[in-house]
Amino acid sequence: MTRNPARRISLVNAAIEVLARDGARGLTFRAVDAEAGVPTGTASNYFANRDDLLRQVGEHIHVRFTPDPAKVADTMRAPADRGLLVTLMKDLLDRLRKDRAAYLALLELRLEATRRPELQAALTKTISDTLEDNVRFHVDYGLPGDRTTVVSLYLAMSGLVVEHLTLPEVLPESSLEGLVEALVDRTQASAGGAGGGTGKEVVREP
Image 1 (tube, rainbow, N blue to C red):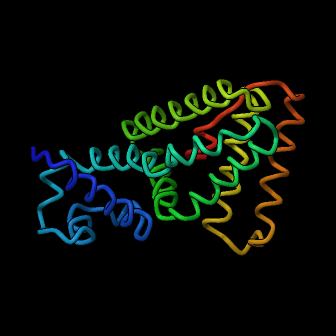
Image 2: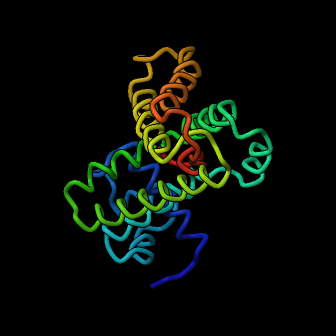
């Protein structure tokens, strides 16, 4: 099978756009070729089948969600307190808003995974690994809260992001930053101020 890393990534990115725009039913090799602007039949040379394409899309979405390491390093120079946690959550929301197509594609993948056991297993591993990375990041930096804080923030931010990216008029744009601060405060309060936390779930996918 053809191995051109740059072309493969281009095709996966095209698949993300198709998924976000047309849903899982619209994701065909022909549609991916058209979106990528390559000759018909190109995608079939890079992916063994549709399941392989879906799996690679799921993996690459999380790569797109990963923040710039230099920016993270600069952000983490601040004290590991409530303010830093709020900053990380706001950065996460801003990053996902800027890559709305990738997040919508992820939602499509989640739905498709309920019907495809292999995709469900692959997506579960990808998201579980990311969450564990986030827990380690949070703990290593001594951010406020514990593992429950990280998981709670993951779930809370997921709900906020889904609401904003799918039905943006439900929550006023002007309320988002205040809601993020409230979510951080509530999750810290429920953890009783224990230590530990996340950076990649804080910095990657909710």
